[in-house]
Image (tube, rainbow, N blue to C red; front, side, top):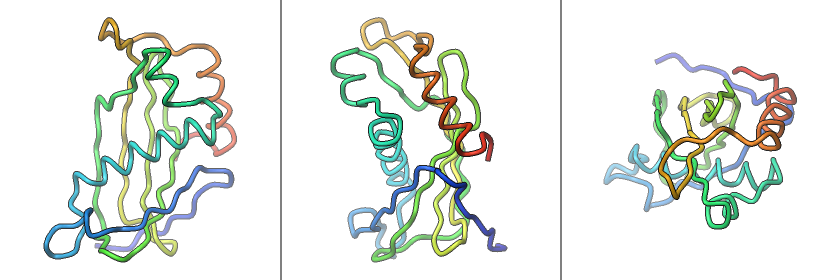
Length: 151
């Protein structure tokens, strides 16, 4: 597979993840379901650290969840135990109650994986999707504008 170069846009939320033994299969390669936990952690940190919206409060106090409703992931180059992988979050689309994100895993300027995730804001009490509040939508729009919107 051809290497695909990737440089995060200015201002894009990026976190470095240490690939640990617990992430890997017996061959020392990240076992793919563990990436989904990494993606969720990245999103939680993005809400709190980048958007200034306490993710835990949204769930525990406001009773709103943000489950994945769809994920497509292309795994291009394996990541192995002992490596560090950068994960960058970019907004692709803001819906009425959903958010489509691109999460790009990269190392040394080379894209190793790309996920397209859709999360939906839902009421934990009713189990139904709810419209994004204006303040949250504004935070998403500001981030998208800062990072160039689409990936």
